[in-house]
Length: 430
Image 1 (cartoon, helix red, strand yellow):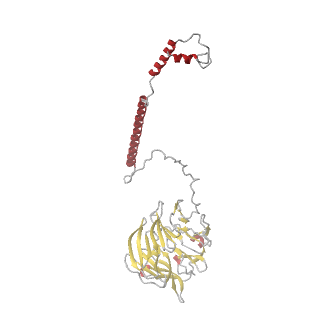
Image 2: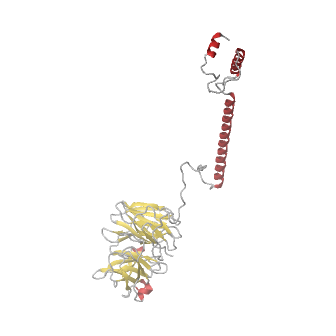
Image 3: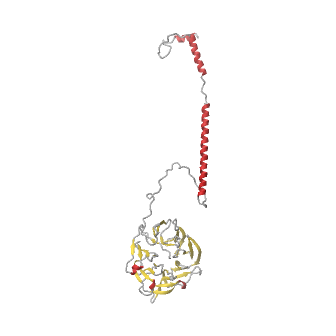
């Protein structure tokens, strides 16, 4: 060991051989022992390996983990594809044979989606309370209430003037009131669903009592066609003079009112391609009897006055029988019963009259029958007439009760909005 090392060790200010203030060594350290200790320390430092910049074991473990993750993701992807293929095959085999398109398969809920509760009677707003149940169907607001207890929403239908059942459970035909765009005719399917437009922007619309025929005016022509499931079939047309509008049917013949000069015409689409001459003596028509004759109001007598008459559509509405006894109103509101026995019509004294057509001409065929008719009269198969009065109430007129001197019954209709009126649906004739 060098002389300089000995001087450094001998100059230590502390009598102890360390900095901790511990006990003195009991024996002195020779130069050989110090040199051997220094060599051992250096040898151990050289023998200890330096840490590598990259750990091979760690790299191998990380590589193994990445491979495992790839295999897991690949397996999940293959399982998802298999699930989609199996579900698609089940949808194609289980669906209707004529269905087209690709079914949508959703695996799990989308993120952020929280399923809500199923609709219940408390969460779904109910339709308005059902009105009084008449013998016929009734339209209140946007709802059609059938006499069987069903109700259907009339989606997209505007204010209605009249409605007609179609024979053989063929649904309903709904006619709108007059608007700036004209009249619209809808067909309502028998099992519900949205009504379908049959005609739009027509100047006038007339529907047969069985709902199978319709006539309308559009521009300078009048059309007639059959109606099946809301579709017009075998449409025919003819030129029409100004003011001529269809108002009803007598069998296959169309009854046409001449609004500008008065009178009525008859058009037989299967036979004639032109309108017949106008009969100026006919003032109004109320309907037809089972024998085909038309019940109407004519101008007759001397001096001339309004009279009730049975008219022959085959002879240009020539009168067959006349009764000038009933004092009739000139508004033309009224309807003939399905059996042809009765006529409910407005009288001249702001009230309705019930006329026995079986005794027409006897002078005593008319009896007072309650409030005046303000809209359409419909007859039930049991022989009662229904109409809506000026207050919006439903009036029932039973011929046997009127004949016995009783007044017709009046029932308010629930759910009618202010300014609205219920519409009684005409039934098909047996």
